[in-house]
Image 1 (cartoon, rainbow, N blue to C red):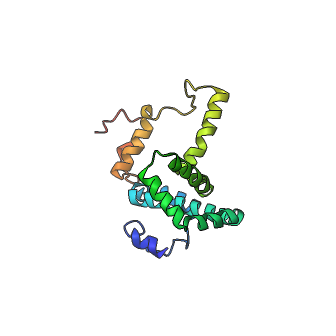
Image 2 (cartoon, rainbow, N blue to C red; image 1 turned 180 degrees about the horizontal axis):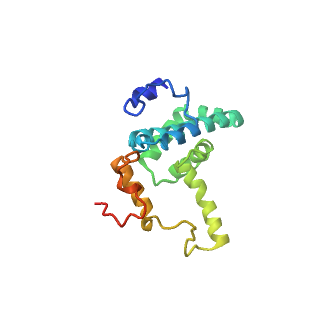
Image 3 (cartoon, rainbow, N blue to C red; image 1 turned 90 degrees about the vertical axis):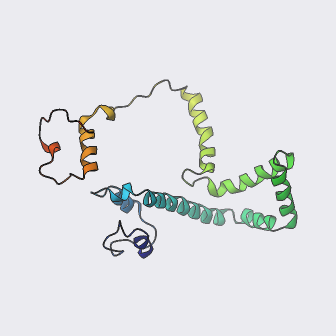
Length: 190
């Protein structure tokens, strides 16, 4: 918590006292991203750090689970990668990426690494695991020709434009805000 408050002192103005220790719970992250002045959601480095934390913690949880359930496989993998033969084959595959041996090595490594990387959000392994599911859905339901939504288009909603303008001008609590008047005629936002 102190590290997080120290990294982002412009966001956590009161220090680390309100922060939970350890990884941030999802409810707390939701609270921060919906904070009234929008400072957390506007901070690109903060949202990137949260996403990075999400990915790393998912990978650690998955690796711990795989280590418990596939212990023999992981031990075999550890013994394999520590041999000189493996290092030579890896160097050969690196210098000859189109060779049959490189393809075989890539396939065997991906099988083992997919055990850990399959559930990490937005990882290449998760995307690769999702492709067959999307193909099956396309085969089962056909190619979607149009999308049906019950939400009104946001670019036509004047209220959303007004809220966005209030947010940009930081006029949430301004009693003289032109946006609080009822039956307001169209307003130029530029």
